[in-house]
Image (cartoon, rainbow, N blue to C red):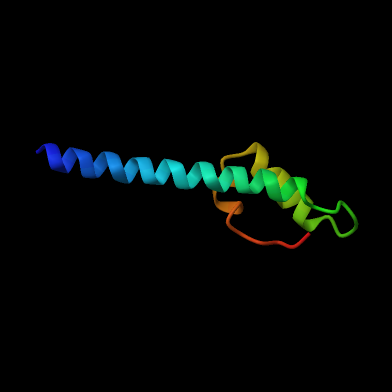
Length: 64
């Protein structure tokens, strides 16, 4: 029973770490955008920065 609990905790921990890394990556990519037309990447990364979607968007590449 203890091992199963540790495995579940480890899976949750890995998931949370993955989501946090995605969010941080989204913020870093927003800061590295060039802010010149077209603003597609800037808009997507801004939305991701202020919503939980950033955890997934951070792993995607929309250019500069």
